[in-house]
Amino acid sequence: MSSLNPFHNALASHGLPISRRLALQYVFGGGVSVLFSNSPLFGAAAAPPVTSAGSTPRAKSVIQIWLWGGPCHLDTFDPKPEAGADYCGQFTKPLDTKVPGMRINDLLPVLASQGDKLAILRGMTHGLNGHETASYVVQTGHPEGGRIVYPSVGAVVSLFKGRAAGYKNEIPPYIVLTEPQGRFSEAGFLGSRYKPFATGGNPAKTPFAVEGIVAEGFSDERQRARRELLHHMDTLGNAVPKHPAVAAMHRAEEEAYDLMLGDGAKTFDLNQEKADLRDKYGRSTFGQACLMARRLVEIGVPYITINYKGWDTHKQHFQIMRRQLPEMDKGVGTLIEDLSTRGLLDSTIVWWGGEFGRTPKVQNESPWNGGRNHHGKAFCHMVAGGGFRGGHVVGATDARGEEVTERPIYPWDLVGSIYQLMGIDTEATLPHPLGLTARVIPGKDEKLQSGGKLLEIM
Picture (tube, rainbow, N blue to C red):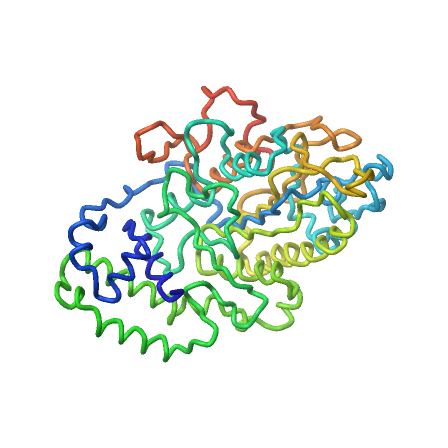
């Protein structure tokens, strides 16, 4: 079954909404009458071409590092040792970075060495404390509760920078390493054509078993033999090979097998990297996902999300942080350094953050015993590259990290800034299937609180 995934995804990339059942009917030569009489393939219209009327693009790609669950701002990029142990907990000696006055957690030495490339956003706020609603707001740049379900930033970038805009790479334009978040629809009203390709698998293992592309125990020769057998059984394709729908299926199949047997599969082969560089990223799933993201940027993929679990630390917070922070530091710090060394950081936005922060006051009482809860009033994100100027801190929180006191940054402010650097017109509308007015980011008429785009670091 997994060998059908690239075929199914390639059909979707052509704007052909085909089910897995219909794909099976096609490749095994059955269900001809169903295909011709009921298939949405016939007369299916692809999404209209989309042009970007924004500013001249400075960024070609985005690597979004999504800390699933919400990282604590006090224990990452907004340390508060002066607030006392009830707030800073075990982290009492933050590190100075290369930038005077910019301090971060002492378990982040690699990122500290890259401080001149980082823009730390300490004024992030939205006031939401629920995972689903906060994730939706941060990932889409739109407020919760409306009747329109908006697409994520990755889906919007895929719309503006994907196939309709001339993207020709065989690897889909929106990739998730390694599994979707699942807390909201990434594609929203744009539909399945703009959902991310989730790799599955574990990039720290050999081989990296990318779902539908790289299969453990299957040689290229065996895949070719299976393909020849399917062609032999393809009574429909052999009967009407020139029919537009069948021809589209054949093109999709070619793209799928190019991924499985061509350069696409090689892209996911991390054994092509030097062992010492892999060690530097860290041999963890996350560290190798960061290395994989750099490889995807190198071949021009516009949007890559790394879904990094483990940050919902209601209990055993500090024990988890002592494990997670060094792993995160190696992966993200090495990624920024590697992109810079290769001349890719200027054209790649690295966007680090989660749906909210965590309560500044440590919950020492039972049953939490040293945990932190959800905190949407004030939290941190970090951006680097792609036109964002490093060595800056934007916004500030109070002495305990409970409230934003300077330069609030709302999700639509950050998302709009990313779109602008990507050359996407922030006043453009998106193609809603019911003809509703759906803007790339909220308009002034929606009267949302806003600190404005991050022009001070752009």
